[in-house]
Length: 168
Image (cartoon, rainbow, N blue to C red; front, side):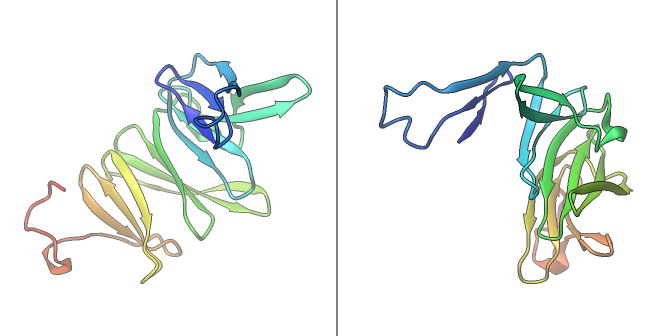
């Protein structure tokens, strides 16, 4: 189990910590990063989004455990990345600067930039809809339905059964 604390520290522990009070959690460095979100990608790498330091990657090697800027997301250096999500199609979505999504694709352990989707608003959550393979994104501008293959998008509205207003 990985836990991100309010002070931006990351703690690793096992599921039985509450039952086994003798086990101490392992603190993964008290970081100067303002961590906003935490994501384990399908390639096994662990990334964190930050307020002002872009995307950082958790590195574990002979020097210990630490965070480093993730060079697979060079456009994010200095950005305010608030929420991250990876869908069932290997798309990685980064909610950036309260107003846009940056879409990346993970293929053969390589991450490449795909598209910027502007004017989305602050994204709060993501959901893979198994019925139509779309990704639903809860944002400040409403619920966005996104096709993960063509990246066509449409905000859900009254025709989808939602109330006739934009505050969801």
